[in-house]
Image 1: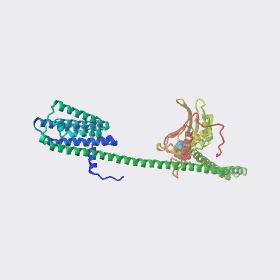
Image 2: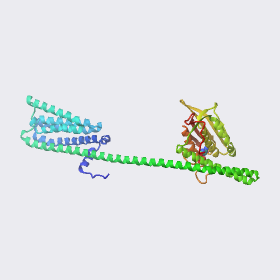
Image 3: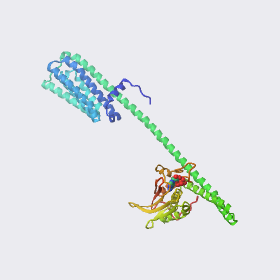
Length: 478
Ligand code: ADP
């Protein structure tokens, strides 16, 4: 928004606002009243100061002394108003205080300068107006009633007792009436102008807030559209990856099948060199098939198309099965691989195939990153209130992982060493897939590790997870 030029009235508002509590300036109505209290206080103080020469010119003796005392007293008491405003942080008390000062000062002046013939009489009319502007509508009603009572009381005292003093020189009534009439007109005009300025400011601020709100709404809408586009793009990517992986599997299975047949032929024909090459083709193809399976699984999980089965089995049986399958790899790495089962069988109701897949990944990684060391798979039960959990902890004595990488490795396609010269093969998909699978079964996965000391990957699963009951339906795509 363009910056508006600083007019004299805006400068005046800036001066009056100085030192006001910020909370008071935040609310438009409170700010308007606070400004009026400040403005009125200064006008009253100015009026009291201007009254001093008038008192000196129109009174003598005791009348002059008491009138000067009353005038200066009103002036000093009015100073308390802005102080109250800052102290209380709300305009009500200060508004009533300043109204009270004006009322008391005016009543004194009227009752000592000729009662209803006094030139100050007219000032009583602005008391309820001041109260309403500074402290609200009900304050205006209250001070209107107080003024009426004051007028009736003044009338009664003047009429029935005749004790009201006359400090004012009656010959000067014309000129003092003119002076106070002009001052009253200027004061009322000044206050109503100040009220208008404060109102304009409030409207300008409300309009600026409305424009900001409109901008914020537009931003929210833009973010919503971007989020929708991102979800659509992610779904399309997952669908594409699932289709591609599925299409790649079919010819690759044919390659493996034919290569295995050729291995048998080479055996039969006694061609050991060719056999070795063919075995390498089978091994590399199976590795590729494993990677494609990971991509397929991950894309299915992301597209939430992966169904879980539910089957009853002992948790330690799956751990033993995995250890047995990976024993040959452990031997080639010169690493001891063992399972530490719980004291009593731990029966679970989970997707056995997916639990096995998670353990194969974790134990496979442990062996990959541990040479001539030890890999241990612990299986144990845990209880949290009524909830029962099965915990698999895969511990190795391998290369370990830097603390800064502990979170990162669970993201897809992330490897601690992703340089072209890296020593270990892999796609960076295994742990991401494990995390998705474990979370789908309602569990958690985490890692504790120190570089050079080894790692512990811990999977915590509820003993029974949601899923379709066994017998498991054959998976069409696998
Ligand atoms: P990858 O196919 O590369 O093994 P993963 O998602 O299974 O993919 O693992 C991601 C990375 O986490 C690995 O590349 C490796 O840097 C690190 N990592 C995983 N397991 C271990 C472990 N047991 N010891 C050391 N580093 C590990």
